[in-house]
Amino acid sequence: SEPLILSNAQGSCGCTVPKWPREPIPPGGSGEITVEFNSKNKKGKRNQKVTITSNTNPPQSFIYLKGEVLAAEGTQPAVTQ
Image (cartoon, rainbow, N blue to C red; front, side):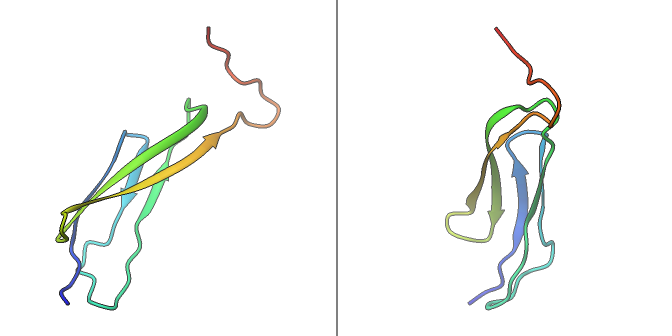
């Protein structure tokens, strides 16, 4: 019954950068949160978390980005011991 106000969106590390609507979203309206993930030197399975802070109860919600970063075609994956 009130506009949704997103006051912050924070990635779990510097490689996960969210962008969110700065204007209030009216009841029945819609908005979009985009998240850019920089996969440089991030090989293997990933589970990145984005924390959304808003005027909701509870005030924080979470978005999880799950996936696997593969080596570029024609390259050898790094081997660690």
